[in-house]
Image 1 (cartoon, rainbow, N blue to C red):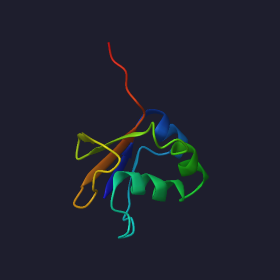
Image 2 (tube, rainbow, N blue to C red; image 1 turned 90 degrees about the horizontal axis):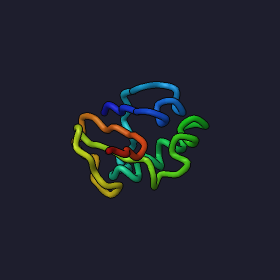
Image 3 (cartoon, rainbow, N blue to C red; image 1 turned 45 degrees about the vertical axis):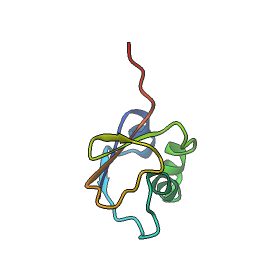
Image 4 (tube, helix red, strand yellow; image 1 turned 60 degrees about the horizontal axis):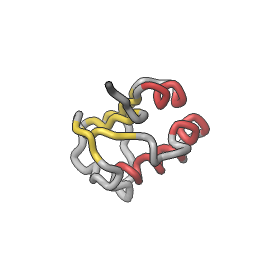
Length: 83
């Protein structure tokens, strides 16, 4: 699946996107974020507070418990504000 990173998540990881195949036991967005945090120092820094990192599956905002099965693209980004 394609993972896309935005704003400070991208800056901390050091790349805008990548193709990864998480293990079968990674089934939700929250589990994916935890798995990513274990991939190295830069990922751990990006996901050090997973409660604030938001996600979208195939360009639709989702909650941390959303299943990732069948996802083509998962994006991670910080909270957004608007006005």
